[in-house]
Image 1 (spheres, rainbow, N blue to C red):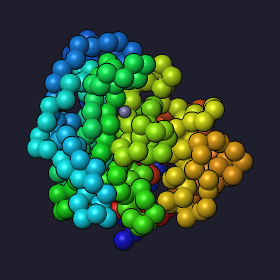
Image 2: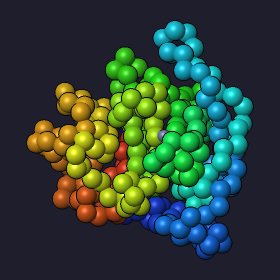
Image 3: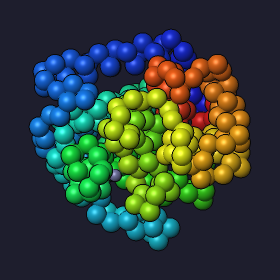
Length: 279
Ligand SMILES: [Zn+2]
């Protein structure tokens, strides 16, 4: 099924309106993007009609073994308050695009999580500023499972939906580590508030970068190209990335230098990914 959705400016207006809601929340909390708010417990992310339960992932049985693993019932995790607002934005992006792409028929049922505040020195988790996403389940039974959907044998539609989960988060958070970006990320997607201490959303590719890994995976999933998954941004990655931008109607845009361009890219990839479509 090919998506029939608006492009360009219409998507941006949607983004800006939602962003405005989040900024209003910041004033109430008294914590800016670089401030440290007190930590609170939350069992849901998203706001209003978009708020959905978070559940604790307690098992990672391989899907091919007959079970996809276990998610508990609704579970309260402890977040930094500002980070929780960012997670609200992430989930609203995913949920609203899924609703829109399915003409209102499908929404998010619940989100699986392996941890928010975790005692990992030097990590965003230590201060409640990272979310380990294990799955998103849809109201029609569809799902993205981070222990399965990224695999080649899951099929290209599942691969694109997995990329949509990552990019819906990347639209609002600078640190996204997909499966494979480290030994600690074997079965979940890590979403963090800071990247190397910065809150900048700009795409980056110095060293072995998680963004490069995400772009490489994305080019594989959406373009079907045999690109290496190694986190190193070389000429091959650069070339396919430019092709991806072109296919999305973003030729000449620069997600490395413009937050608006980065968010437009993330929004479009989510829009195609949630329905498994190719640009
Ligand atoms: Zn993590």
